[in-house]
Image 1 (cartoon, rainbow, N blue to C red):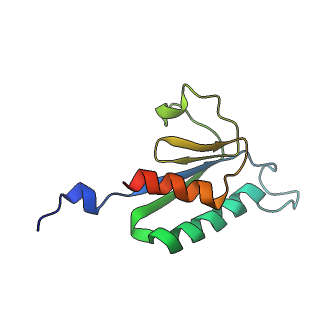
Image 2 (cartoon, one colour):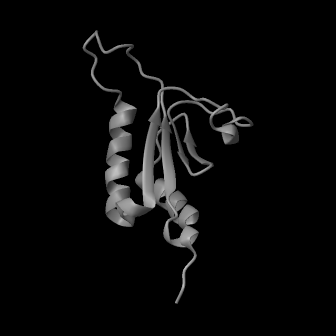
Length: 107
């Protein structure tokens, strides 16, 4: 049986957009808590879907020039996108919401 290359190699990109509370880390405030939550979500998603089907990216700002699908939305940080869909804006999504979005994107 032959499979199309795109079906077998399909990766879902999960992105975090956040605004760091501390610039440069010189004040000792530590890592951004949203980034830590995102890392936890990433670990759970890899356990469920495998690392071959997922890619994770994090950005310290929302850049709608680089990501045109963000242009028409009033996205607030922290925000998480799954593929070109906004899974959450203004708060970190729960694991169940993120899993549902990844399942839709993989189909």
